[in-house]
Image 1 (cartoon, rainbow, N blue to C red):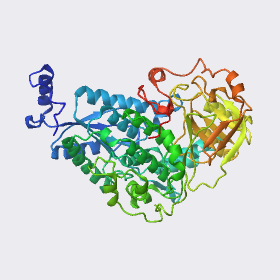
Image 2: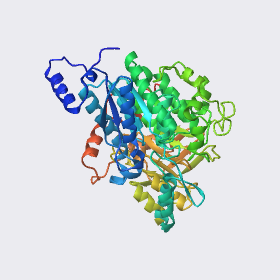
Image 3: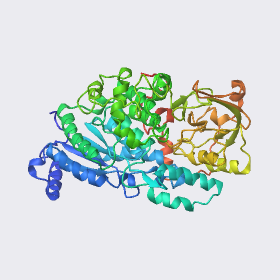
Image 4: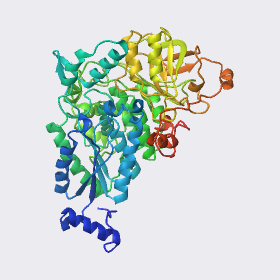
Amino acid sequence: MPELRSQLPPTSALALARRAHYTALGIPRQDWDKPKVAIVNTSSELAACYSHLDEISARLKKHLREVGLLPFEIRTTAPSDFVTSAGRAGRYILPSRDLIVNDIEAAVEGAKLDAMICLSSCDKTTPAHLMAAGRLNIPTIIVPCGYQHSGLAEGREADIEEIFMLASKAAVSGEPTDHLLPLAEDAILGPGVCAGLATANSMHMLAEAIGMTVPGAAPVRALSDKMWEDVRAAATALADLIERDVRPRDIITAGAVRNGVRTMLAVGGSMNTIKHLQAIAIESELDIDVWGLFHALGRSTPLLCSVRPNGPRLTEEFEDAGGAATVLRELLPLLDGDAITASGRTVAENAADAPAADGDVIRPVDDPFGMGPAVTVLKGSLSPGGAVAKRPVPDPGPYVFRGPACVFGTRDEAIEGIASGRLREGDVAVIRGIGVTGAPGLGLTSAFIFALHARGLADSVALVTDGQFSGLVNQGFTVGEVSPEAAEPGSPLGRVLDGDPIEIDIERGTVDLLVDPAELDLRPDYQPPADRDSAGYLTQYEQLVQPLSCGAVLCARPCAAASKETA
């Protein structure tokens, strides 16, 4: 075992102070020199996503002690997209990811703990934990804490995503919502993240794909026997990582990042995984353009499953068919099989023990649902730094949309544009000024998309925005996270005028502003409104955040978006 950084000079003031605290805490003297591990319990009582994490932490402490480690539970902020989006139009959601990273750094680095085991649940917690792992670079393992069981309403499956979509549509159409009350009460039957293949489950699988979990950890039903087996296995694996001094940057390599991209493309994972994986790579000091990788690998990666919201299959069925482990087994010819994982084995060694594809829920590589991609990175004259779109699995088309721009400054203004008739069939709605610095904090536009559905315009009106979507959005011509965002000097999006022709081509992977570049150069840059609703942390965030193409991290480390290096 390497020298432990937690071992302070025994007669130093800090060592004596720590000795006093350990005595008061009732920690046995024989445990004082053991490796000290942070259990990162990112949880709160605000959402069911986290309601079981205290129980997991309690059992995990026992398992860690059994393998010779000394655990200390630490807490961080714990956002939930369905709860924390109530304030400031959802603009705290992405910034909360980086707040978690800084929480972890302050607690773990400040105390000089030797390792971390992170309890990952809702959307922003897994990327934050992986970013912190890359930044601190001490032995770390991720524990995906599982998804909630879907309920039954009126004899059919019902979940929180369905409530969100139906309620959003009703709100903009003026329909009554009384009929949704029983659905809301029946949609969640227990703790855990949303049951569909939205951002939380996608990030759990991404953590496994890049090697930072035990094999077969995602997706998993919350509080199931399988989850408890994974919790125990994670404690054992962490002890081995400490003994062998294997650190996150040994695991999160260029090959591991490519494996993560391939896996997300193969399952049709959430579009939000792109910016999160870019942030993880940067915090791990990798100079890789993740957006470029999604763009480059999309056409050569087979779609192996069709799980809600992409298709009809349930996450429970996907887990029972082998989950991420089986997908990695099927993708192995396209992966870096020599990449090491937190289990102490390589990707190829883990894949050898995974179940084979059943041909139904998970298809083999030689008989996929299609060659995708479901998650599409678009580049072009309107988005030279990249933009993202999500499509259903399989994608029936059409693939090209061309129409005049109809420009809005906020999501709510765009929704009003539907009601007033300003936005018409054939238009491209442009919602801008809601990027990471323009908002600040990356505004949510999902309600506008559901408003289009409510008015029957989902297939006849396109959307281009520098804001973000929910992981539920996967239909129509919806292009988000356009980079550079409107608030950046020289941004093409910031110079769009009403009536400018815009073309979106999903098959070619392009989104173009069909305006003469010479004319565009003469137009002024977009200016954010002077009365933006921002204060406190969001104001600090605006000053520090890097562009979305660089993962929207709060550090100025190298980012390959500038060089377009794609590993």
